[in-house]
Amino acid sequence: MLQKTSPYMRQANLIGGEWVQADSGATIDVVNPATGVKLGTVPKSGRAETRRAIEAADAAFATWKKSSVLERHKLLRKLHDAIMDNQQTLAELLTMEQGKSLTEAKGEVAISAAYILWFAEEGRRTYGDVVPSPWVDRRVIVTKEPTGVVAAITPWNFPSSMLARKIGPALAAGCTAVVKPASQTPYSGLAWGALAEEAGFPKGVINIVTGAAGEIGDEICANPLVKKITFTGSTEVGKILLQKAASTVKKVSMELGGNAPFLVFDDADVRRAVEGAIVAKYRNSGQTCVCTNRFFVQAGIYDEFVEKLAEATAKLKVGPGLEEGTQQGPLIDMRAVEKVEELVGDATAQGGKVVTGGRRHALGGSFFEPTVIAEATPSMRFMREEIFGPVAPVFRFETEEEAIRLANDTEYGLACYFYTGDLGRAFRVMEGLKYGMVGVNEGLITTVEAPFGGVKESGLGREGGHQGIDDYLDTKYVCIGGLGL
Ligand code: ADP
Image (tube, rainbow, N blue to C red; front, side):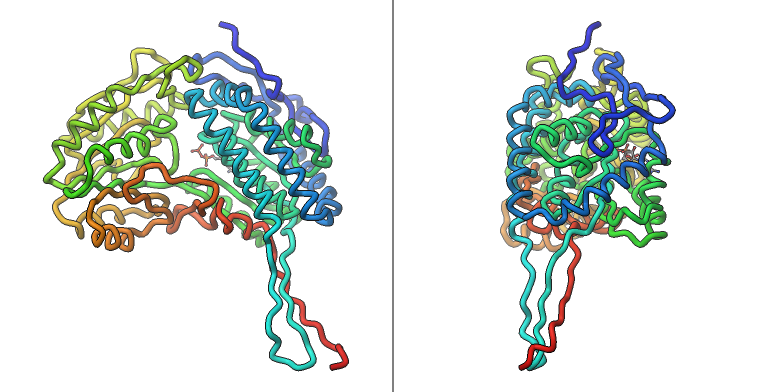
């Protein structure tokens, strides 16, 4: 079957303004998860190519850091426009390599552009301080400077927007970047190189390498020219990068795994809670770090909630992302399907009841049926493990204290959600949940204006919001004396 191709589909790496292949000529195949058909290849780069990319970023930094904030603002606005002018094409490319529905892909491209615009604006507001001096004859000034070369490593579930949150603040702050997109979905990452060229960014400001993750990661961590690592991915790999980055004491931002709870109290608006549950669970076929992993529902409305959730879940249209009307695309690969199957098997062996779904989808490949499992218990694996698939386990609870305790019983602390009609309870629960982000009577809360990030083992730092540029700036304190006062 013929695949659609895209003018933004670059099958090369961008180093110092040149589109190049790996030194060895080796490549990695990129496969469309909806069809299993190869889309193309990308270079399998390693340490040497990564080192050159870092050196190119460092050389570009010497002049880029001196550009005016207004100049950077204007270029970022052009980048925003270039993305939106090509929203459809970029979304098609994203769907082809990642699998999500075209509607979701267009949404992701739009939010990528929105991050760029937000940081174009925030870049102009990276104020310092003039501090009242404790000395009569000295002045105290605090300024913010770009940190330097930033390395950005991104995952396959949001190959465009995860990069936008990193590239946007990095470039706005005056940093340069070396980017490593995930091998499953490299084209949306490489497209940023083509878009940046179109917008007029100088050579070397953005460099992009694809290939052997371990080798590229090792060079990034060991190379003293890299001043900051920003990573979105698994907690497991995040810990490896933290350890390795310690050797050169780099700044780090980590957006890691989640185990989001979704609490529904007896006093909630069940219709609204079900609507929120569908978005919070099934967006990107359950493959997001803020997707609900565990539903906790109070006993009084448990049966009603399960029934309505199962009804809404069964209506989700599963199909190839490019097909009109598709709401649920395939999972990223067969490994993901096997993991989901294992978790469902573990649950049913322990008394979990499959209310809808539960199996591989009739479409074959990596399609999986949207699934609801009732009578979930804390001994089941999805109490602790990220599902990363379209499975909704529903636990039952009796009291508010119990719900908060169960929700917090995890090493993760990224997003959580809860539904209640009681104002006092809303505050008690919001304050009781140990998470970086809380949705109260809302299942979709990500927006460029707000700080995205987690506590505990879900990560370090925040992306988006006015906070999202802080990690790309160093604070410099200047004490000025000898003023003849
Ligand atoms: P996921 O489970 O979402 O694939 P990973 O943490 O494995 O999450 O991957 C996220 C990103 O980290 C990808 O770009 C991947 O290639 C990269 N990666 C994986 N292992 C390493 C490593 N040892 N060093 C650096 N990057 C890595």
